[in-house]
Length: 238
Image 1: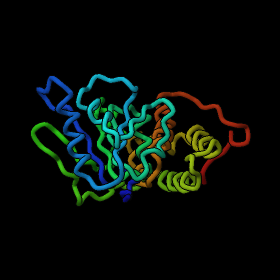
Image 2 (image 1 turned 180 degrees about the horizontal axis):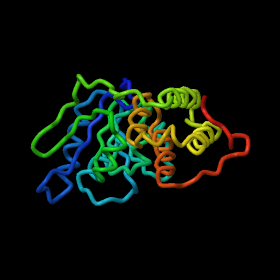
Image 3 (image 1 turned 30 degrees about the horizontal axis):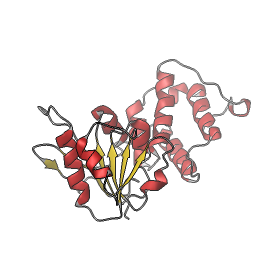
């Protein structure tokens, strides 16, 4: 089992519905064929529910050596050291791929915009009906210009703190961020949500924490205020 530096499985593919395809079965088949060519442990198929419509996936899960799990009661630990067919995941399920320890994962995409945002920077193989787009091996993390007003240092601090906890950001780090955004609005006004999202991803933060930090800034830009514990109400990053 090998993990990429970005926290996702090194062998990761997305099977995408291709223009003019009127059935999802070819999309499902592409994912299966790619996964079975990968080296690794036993095959695990993850679907939203036990019952689904795809005949080809039903044939796969019927195999005695294939494990079939559903979202209900799902734990990402089941993916460890396995080859995983990840069928139609939503945002929450896509985030569970980060650090899951799978040998290989083939995602059968349902919502392209959700997949594109959640797996930004994962550099997956892309499986289409008429072509396979391999990862760009020369892709280098690029955080762009340093974020001004000390925000670079703030996000680096937040990333270090989050890395120290298995469950990611704690409430107190969240409150410090929220307080600073309210008490130092000029620090954040020129910085876009996407800049913050890109910086957090480049720092190796868990996708859930990336969403949290970017979401705080979006809420401030929408004019919303935060409820912060009294001990952090006046907090400002130095």
